[in-house]
Image (cartoon, rainbow, N blue to C red; front, side):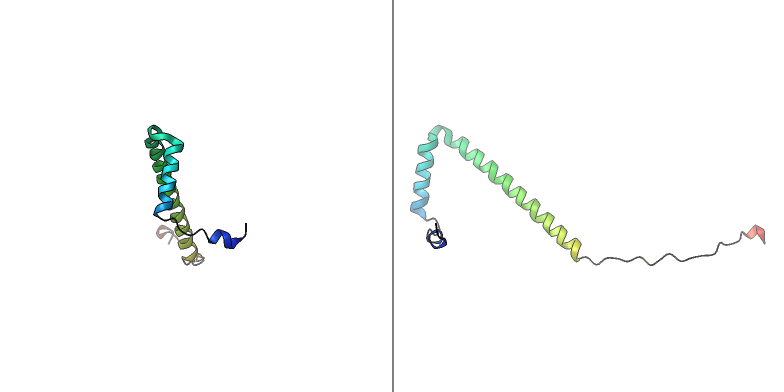
Length: 87
């Protein structure tokens, strides 16, 4: 199968969607169609949730990389202070 034949399919129109709907109705039957639609809706919801979580993780990782690193100055070397009572 060459790439030009794959690109020749094009977007799905109304007649194609009707044919797909009839095929689903014939394959699954009218009694199982609500169950099929419910499971399809749940899987689409889970997919959307996973996609959102993945996009958030990418966004957080990008922000972490772009955030400038705060460098702490080296600690000062101090001499111990004598107690007031020692003087």
